[in-house]
Length: 108
Image (tube, rainbow, N blue to C red; front, side, top):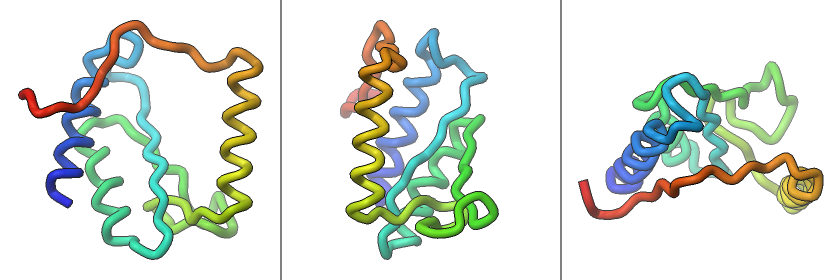
């Protein structure tokens, strides 16, 4: 788990250097919980190292299929809805592609 958290941290750090992101844009961790809350929480906690970030997944906002402060529980229905929403956004031209690619590798 430590290696995954480090990869996420490295990626977020590099992402912050992108001119379209900077240090003011909020990151939104969307983590699938599905029975492993400790693992999911450790992934979400990594986002605290690259503030600001928001985690809207709380029972006060969503009545079901969330672990408060951690992430979402996925089902066939929620996955289908996510794919449909993504397709809709793409067809509406609301996804923008940034210049310059950020990725995680073994260089430091």
